[in-house]
Length: 356
Image (cartoon, rainbow, N blue to C red; front, side):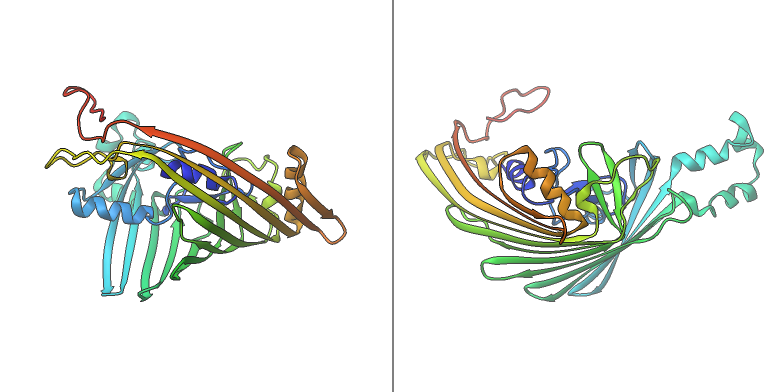
């Protein structure tokens, strides 16, 4: 259900995508192009935190990984507890494939034997084998969190610009405020698979907390500055219009109503943990949502809203002289769900475990 919610939100809001292209492990979707379910991810746990968790609780001192553009790499996280409310993580990455290739460059298959220890040691000084990332999280108050991160990806090219990012979270009683800035910011176009670097990108996001039933709204202000450039590869792809410099604002409000037609109150099996605690009650339910959204764009990126308005009939207005575009839309959905079983029993005791 969480993935389904991300898919619905992705039609209106730009969600993060999982990617091996950065040490942080995330890139933002190009505005206006929803991500597939397999790419969208949660926003609370970054890759350095995931690696730190595996090192602590899964006894994995080094984490090997494989990507098409880098091959086999080895990653290690060093946790730095500064104070009770301040922590830092240092993430290092070593390109094993490139190291082995350099080792065999002048010696063929016997490269390891023909090289002495001194020449092998010099290979480790090649900075293109390494990538280094640093992230720090500060709990300013019980409701305020500040995250700072930076990484240098030397494996791509020697002139790689370090990526810097800052994210501020504030919890209101019934809302969440997020302010994030990145320079450069990495975006991914899900239609072409092309990555783009925007010199500076900043977003302010205010959203009401999700409710089972009731009124909710979401406000977002986004600003891009500088000319976008293709990240890696030959610069032949066309730049998405939404990445050009400009300011865009988007707001949406909706009313949702959930009704339980039937929900089982039968006792569960004792001492058996359900596969998913949120799906442990057999039920039949229905839900309906109705709402509206409004988008405004100023600057060169406003042409994107004009292109969107051509596909579907919207309430739209465009002023090419002032580079201003306004786009409005309404939406509604009805869903019906039914579940039998509480995910406490295995379908088969052999092979892959399926629950019902």
